[in-house]
Image (cartoon, rainbow, N blue to C red; front, side, top):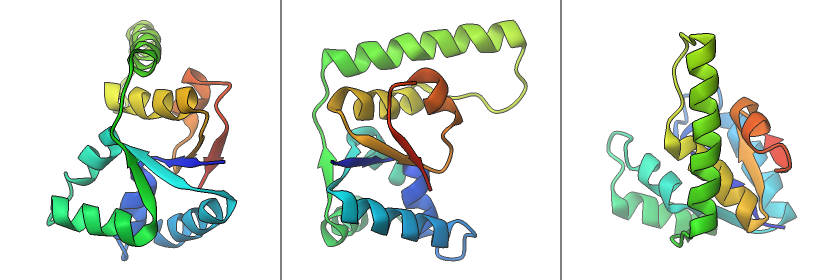
Length: 140
């Protein structure tokens, strides 16, 4: 079974001085042993936001690690992401949430894994457990 990787796992892996590096490395190794690794285009885009991360760097990283980038998107992913983002937004308005808010990309990453039938590897499973309760999630 393929494992979709959340941005936070790869960022933890790439930041070698980060406390999450060891957790991310072990989780990625275990996911690789279970089957293929995949990221959606949104994760690729988020990875580019890091300092000194160019397209060439990310392309080489995914090639060297055997991670496949799924550049395709379809209506099912966008509908699932939008629907769960709508529910989340309504909850946060009702609860007057003060912690950092989630963005549509978070829900897109979960919807991509869910609609494609992948396992999702993440460091923060709270939002995905709520939004996609049927999604199989592995917390790094």
